[in-house]
Length: 301
Image 1 (cartoon, rainbow, N blue to C red):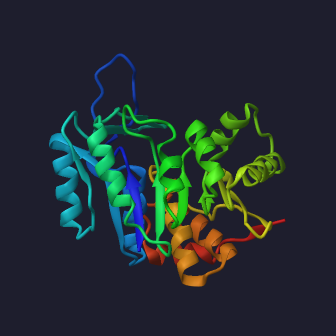
Image 2 (cartoon, rainbow, N blue to C red; image 1 turned 135 degrees about the vertical axis):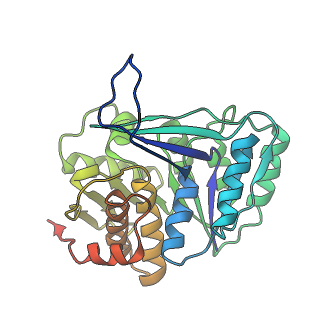
Image 3 (cartoon, rainbow, N blue to C red; image 1 turned 180 degrees about the vertical axis):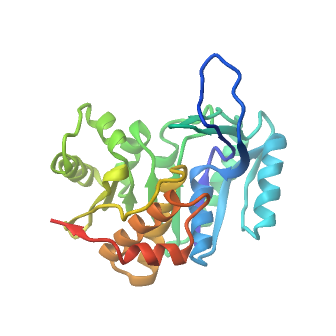
């Protein structure tokens, strides 16, 4: 079974405008809500591959109730802990000439509620996959993911950055997925080309990661496998519609590809095609769109 952990789920409120003018009244031409939170996004994309998963994490307040309702409407399996203090996030995603985001801070789980979640995580088995991704809930220690990994024998896919990632690396995550900006922040320097990105990714393997997938946005992605192979792909052609959730779709695509082929290189191809399929769609990319984009991918030397 695949489990996804979202400590800070959200309702994402998408607003489309012709132009965003700061300090003035702006009126949207279109608006809609989507479920948000990185782990939930991974589960939603896996659903498009007809792969079931169980979403874990925290929900709180009226917004948490709405998230639970929407998950149930989509026949989505979940086992969240209800938090008494605060409310689940409502994030604002603005699409004008550029994309902008305003992300709320979210609910505050108590020690007892955190312990309840840890109890659920302890039931995960060695042959399961656990996806740990996204921000920690307010008040949680930065070593929380490291603590989870120290007590978990499942394959762990880790999509976090900064200190949270550094603390978790010694526990040998199966896959990590930093983006270029996160690598630059971790290593304190601008990365001029893919060669420098690869050197940083190799350092993360030395620190403990088995497989490293680096998203380069419109420039594609780089993958370093535990077999010490290095692969680079450009994104397939398409019109960018919505980049929100594209990185989470890459994670889901990697898992789907690996489960189907048991091949790390093929999983990387699925990952890039999945991220692109979602970036070129209003919601998450369909399996049919992913397969279509797979045919366009060409490896760079």
